[in-house]
Length: 344
Ligand SMILES: Cc1cc2nc3c(=O)[nH]c(=O)nc-3n(C[C@H](O)[C@H](O)[C@H](O)COP(=O)(O)O)c2cc1C
Image (cartoon, rainbow, N blue to C red; front, side):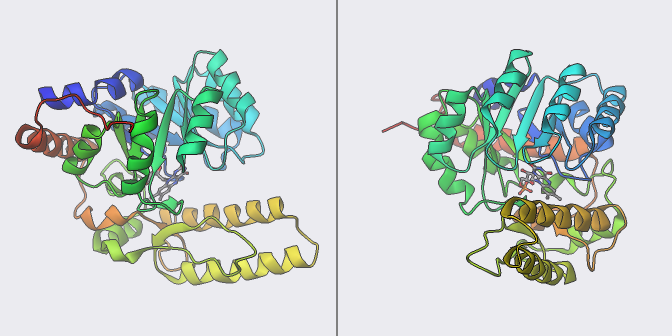
């Protein structure tokens, strides 16, 4: 445990938590109960704002604050039309950390958040953007590999870690995400210089997660190979891929892309509006699966680590299991040197 404490000290100090394990925000899943459970278990819960209105977000934050006195964060999607108002809601509620996701975060948004004393975390899909975000004031970065559930980039975490940790790991805390299902994997990234890890899929089937029993059952049955990225139907029309368990919803998404592209071609939608329409499709389909239990036509967003979700467990059990695996792995394999990869 002493080695683990040393390896992730920076991540723990940054988050203000016992463990540097973030519960990755999952739209519809990461609401007050799961977020508070993660924080109460020593991790760092993150509310998924998704397409919530500012009023709804304010209520969700207050609901979470009623369930935990420990730190938690809020994940905001930068393309949300009310981004400014959502930031204001977080700042009024004295949220300590905001995670900006879904596109390149606008520098004024980063600066506004920082000016209030709240820490900003940003996702980076490449070293060049990571450097730019650090220059713009990002306090920490999340690097998420294409093994993750939900919207994904094209590069695996294994490659992102090699490209980014040696160059930015000393500047800001970097949290790794995507495909992490066990503590040994998390510990290996800490040895390479990561400050902590963000996990999503492993928390979906916890007892505190409000995901519909059908949604949980689909996760418990699935293997890594069932979590596939969505297919882009037209190379001229880029759509951010989404990793999910294959079902009829996957086919419906292909149809929707064809319809949206036809509207763009007919001059009825511009590119930005088309992107938003596609995002609304996902939010609606995810809601149908997570909340209503429609696992046939809803979206079953899941990461490749879904094969390691084998039973319903309490959030605390999941976290303790990961910490224990990490500590045992490090006791055997860590030579005692400081973490980090060399920059050259
Ligand atoms: C059902 C689901 C919904 C998600 N929704 C969001 C989201 O709203 N915002 C976001 O930044 N990431 C979202 N993610 C990604 C997670 O926050 C996290 O980074 C990812 O799940 C990590 O990979 P893992 O699932 O392999 O652990 C979602 C993931 C899943 C599985």
